[in-house]
Image (cartoon, rainbow, N blue to C red; front, side, top):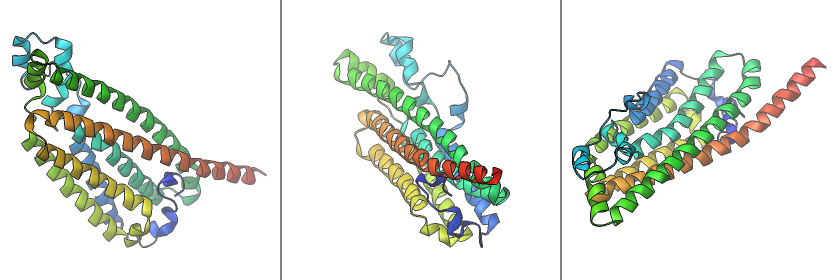
Length: 270
């Protein structure tokens, strides 16, 4: 599968189709989809200007501008913070990769070989832009949080009012559910076709997703409660950068597939 294959060379030829147990493979795709939905939450798809973060009442009493309060609107959403939602940048790429494998089961190999490179190029290009913009926005928010935190006493009071009470319990519950779904996904994928374990890129991407999540959970549990939000925001930036680099690798890897498709089309025309 040269198109997804900057990271996953030869997936389609590695026995992904031959001997594939399709019901289990479809179940694995469903599990991967649920992972992404759980990470972004339904609030990701709803633009609601009236969302007020926890502690906003205290912030209003301190005279915090509405614009500053709006920066933390996501903290009142489910999942809390930015770290969990940022995991969707990695797991979205994983879902796309597995989805492209599923597409190879539906389309004739000749057609699939011609479009998968172009599809991967477009998706990863847009993914890179999205990751870049989200990382910049996350950096701005992190600088704001740190700036307020060190600006004692009033800035610190504002920070504590807005971000001081991070819902670690809710975050732990979401991360636990997501980790369970990832385990289910991995088991189903291996049961569907054990040869997937030979695809280094796919295995690395899955492990990378799990490691990023485990570190995020460690940050939530290790840091003092008042600075958990800062650690969460920092790890969201790290996760976004990792997703950006991986998408860039996939984009570069899609180019040979496009060139081969053009050559094949030219040969057919001749």
